[in-house]
Image (cartoon, rainbow, N blue to C red; front, side, top):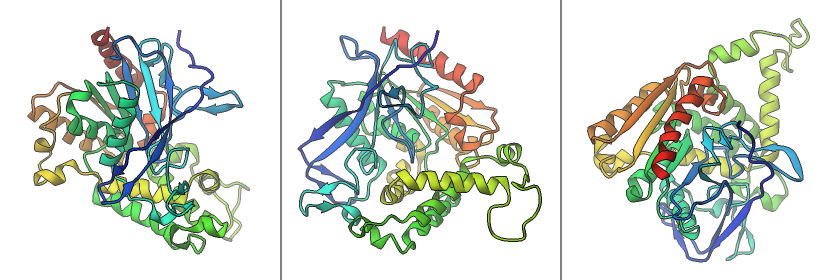
Length: 376
């Protein structure tokens, strides 16, 4: 019987040793907020790291005692008897550096100035996150992960782990991801960022000092992003051309149901997410390209990999299409790695990796049962 991990609480790890970033900047000290579920076994061989996507964070499963409606963003996937079975695995979720859910980020206080970092926070890359995550693993005494799992931007982190620290990960589950963004995806990100950058309340990233939030820009960025995460079929099935009042109003207020939905999502997101974090996360997406260092030869980029792989794509995901996943599979096979591939038929677009789908969950469960047996 599958169930919830129940009531959980966040933990905080403080690192006093400096961390150098790809951009050349250094953080003299930083904090990472994380949660754990399940029990770490005696030889610490059953740990799984969950890497989050653009708007994700450390609260991956379970719920909080003071807000039981605040359920982890992947609670349907992680828990006792679920595909990522916490009866078998010790699961870690964390909020990446630059985030806005407790880890050191742009809204944190810069000890050098006594003010919030704002525009002075380092530009982060996937490689930077992986180095920080490795330090957290060291802190927890985990020398090697049984698996590292991530969807979208999280999948990029999982792949980077297998390249940067090949001996520290036995399995990678890369879901709805790509070896680098397409030109179109970079363009979408640039439009979203410009909505924020041109908001008069942004103040060059130092809006905290003015007591304002660039709500309009962040709202537009989220609306644009949300459109691209869904498929045309999903949007048509959910909203169609439905009108809120049943007739045209001949104006620019909300008329169509889809408009109401997008504005609601934009307002909700702008109320809790940090604009600078949004900028940093989308640039990390843009910058990810392991083959950049190997003359754009992806097979050579994956040469250091020792991990076994499960690659999962979704038929309606046009932002991270199945073709992009097959590029990953091809590069791994070129290096004679053990790789499994599943393309799931789904109507939910890029958001499919967050949905509870019988075929998708069966693929994840079957693969992780093998990982659990190897661990045991």
